Image 1 (cartoon, helix red, strand yellow):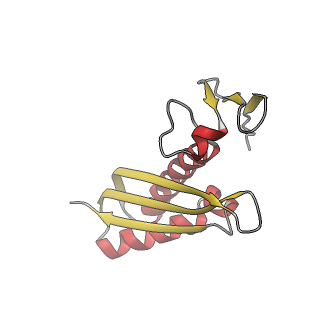
Image 2: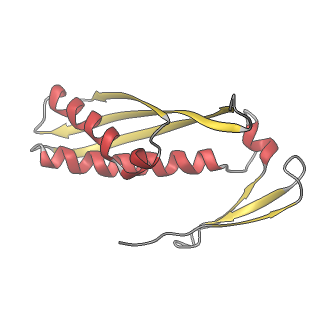
Image 3: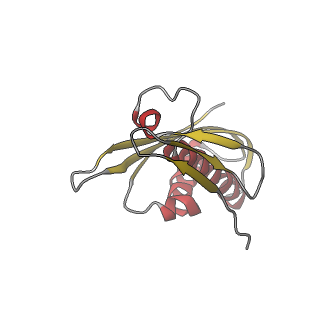
Length: 146
């Protein structure tokens, strides 16, 4: 299987420094990162590890759900997936990703709501990013749209 890479160049202290993360494998971009903006409510034009995890999780989940819908005899017409990743202080020190909230709205042919919800739950448990994040609370809000 493929290996994907990213690289970060950082200068300065945590509180006053900053850096850039480069998506090396795809070469689609280089993005600013800073800790003050990472921990703030407003990102101010920078990304963060949590946003990148959210992007990875939402896209991985969408792919896995699409596969499981097909295996269950359905056809995914459209899946809208979002992931909200929460960064909080860790009681043991530092910070931690405390939770991830997945939300999916699906338009699917050939599956009823129960079949869709089963596939949605199974995808949450089996997508590779979910597996990598074992130990983090992952919630799911799934509904079938008509």
